[in-house]
Image (cartoon, rainbow, N blue to C red; front, side, top):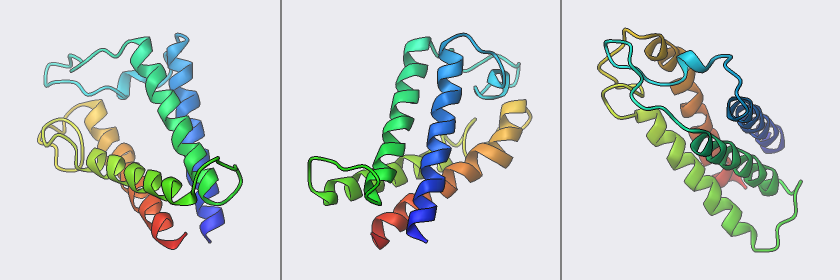
Length: 141
C-alpha cells in the first residue's frame, strides 16, 4: 500500500511541476483560474517566472522525497531525514488546505470567483489529500 501511495503522490507532484514549468515558458492554459482574485476580478498577486520556477523545483523535490521514502531513489543520508521531509510536506499542504481565511483554502470568505470555485472543489481537496497521505506515509514507513 505504501509503495503505490507514494508512487501516486510522486506522480501528482511531477505533473504539477510540469504544469508550472509550462507556465514558466509562457504557457497560458489553466492559468486564469490558478491565481486568487479579489471581488473585482483583479489578481491578488502576479507571480513572475522566477517564483513559478521555484514552485516547480519544490514540487519536483517533493516527488523525490516521496520516491526516496520507498527506496526507489537512494539518498546519501539517513532515511529519518526523508521522513522529516515528508512531515514538512504534510504540514505545508495542510496549511494550504486551511488557507488565508479570506481568498484561499477551505475556510475562505470570498467564494464568487472562478479561482474560489476551483479552490473549493479541486485545490483544497488535493492539498488535504497530499497532506494526509504524506503524513500517513511518514508514520507508516
